[in-house]
Image 1 (cartoon, helix red, strand yellow):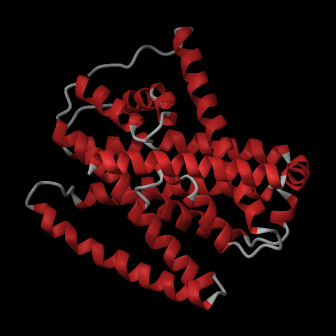
Image 2 (cartoon, helix red, strand yellow):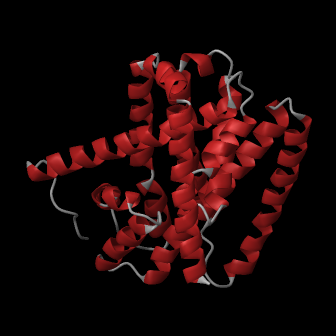
Length: 294
């Protein structure tokens, strides 16, 4: 089953990349014209917000591990995350998580606690994003079909919460104070991520003029969730872009919107490279040391 899923992901990734390239080639003149009018200040601001989101991510692991009784510092988890950024872009989309898990295990953290970190980094943050985005679409989107569908998904997301009681006996559940902290941390991460997406999209004049800001970030959250749960699409590539383009009520061809949204991945890539480069520069100059041990 794992082999079939792996090949399905590879084929879908190749198909998505081929589709994006085809659409770009077919619409290259219009797309280049649109991108030539992009506000660079919006791009730089978007990169800044994504770098901020990157600095927030290790706080999820810190909250989980501290609640489990581990003595570990934010700087340790931040250095691990930054050091492993290049593995984020390897095919499959899971290698950064695997590499970080190896680093945490080398510090003496148990496999169970590492599993809890991975679980909460994915399930808890995604559940929060699903609740916010589906409720936002229901309240803000003028499309009746989308609103009804979002309401159904919102209720479905709420119904997943009681399953926590099933896992409680297996020590998968943290303390109430830990979940309070996780909620705040995940909210901060999504706010920074949404600000990055908004800065990028609003830097494109044709989009900024006709896309309501609040609805834009709600669509971003929802599309991210849909891309994340689409296990056949590594890192949601292809799915995320199509869902945003479908939800967005823009006076532009659908395929062009897909390409413009895909440009946000370039912004994320550049932001991650900048974060990693700064970390490596500081480490090489002795401003910060190697990954510290406790």
